Image 1 (tube, rainbow, N blue to C red):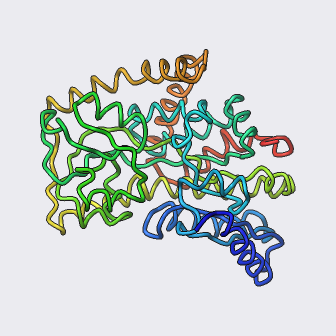
Image 2: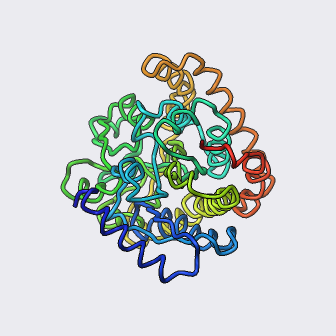
Image 3: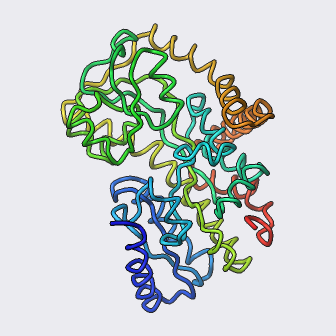
Length: 374
């Protein structure tokens, strides 16, 4: 069903929710993921709980399922206000959001989920060109989350570099596409929502992804092997991208309440996606008889050698393809932020509530909500 046809149905549903709820304003929110995925079951579910708390009951939500708005539709859905708040992935639109995508190009270099989410949040909030390109899009940014370290989920064993030769692997963005091509595999740009079908039909041999996808997208039914090799993590997220029209209509107090609620939910989501769900997925894999492999030492060393070149690759891509003249300086700033937040994450043992508090103190408490996003 096209978005234009959905708009009337969605607005009608929101009117019903508005009349039934105690809140002054009910926002249409879209996780763009099935209930089993932490973007739905934790990120947006928790946000729906936190928002009334933070706004003293003024703001509420009604959730749109992925059958209404999926990841590929999110830009249009937010711009048309079918959704007012949505789960948005900048790497889907690198040419239109190059400054946001720049930090995403560094995904293979990160290893701590909470640190990556916090670094991404501070980087984008403080980055003037990032804010300008979002303003031009008509969007307002309210923080990021991150996955666990990616693995290779496949239908045939991968122990060494040689095993990758000719494999067709689903890629979630250009960093993993570069990795695959470097080691002789063939990357396929397929939406994560279509991964199950692509693997089951033999279109691809597997996916470079979080092991949590075994549960989130039922890959446990089609994957036969998981290879643990350090493939970075997914950090290029904008978990609560907000329509500029919606943001403009809110009071300064309600904007701050949205940011606080989003910040709490972002840390919860990162804990679920980056820690507890991978543990459950590994247990599910063992129960299903999926073979779990550790990449051999030579493979790990080769990956680490490749990852060491990624900052330079990201700078070159950002400069040559998108015209970002100060790409090296901005990459250095992100790496500085990541290092700082990695120390914080270690200090608080990656506790999501503690991380949310520290991010609020370092980032959101310094935002002027009268002008932010305007």
